[in-house]
Image 1 (cartoon, one colour):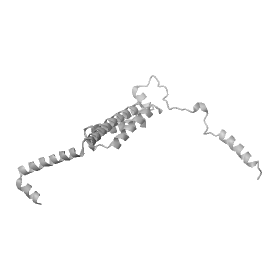
Image 2 (cartoon, rainbow, N blue to C red):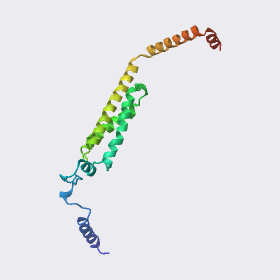
Image 3 (spheres, rainbow, N blue to C red):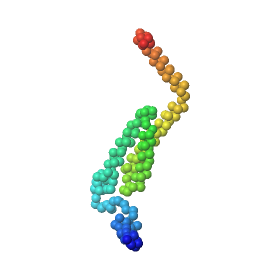
Length: 175
């Protein structure tokens, strides 16, 4: 094999790579999927139907379905804070914040998706703040105070049970 063969192969491959169809000119680097200008004679329904974020695209139906997460978060407002998951609500908050910003970057710009993500982040922030406040409240209460409260509840329950049915209370004490 001659010493010029590798050089010749390199030169041929350079020509092939430079003329490759996957290389794009610099001017066409940022392509968008913007809608074509709408004709003035189109009705509102036709514009909605033919829009890049219209009814027949995933850009419409994904935000519509995502409202279920927002409604589920709102329904959790009525649950006690100790039954809520901090990690789940942090994930909802992060999802809302990240995707709200991203909705304005991607093309086509989807305002409906940005709105649902914004409200998802708001619901997450409210739930996370409720959980953190509950955890601080529990942490600030000393262990002796919690034990005393539990003991008082047990005494009240026992007194109420003895007064109502002394024979059953005596039998349960003997066991």
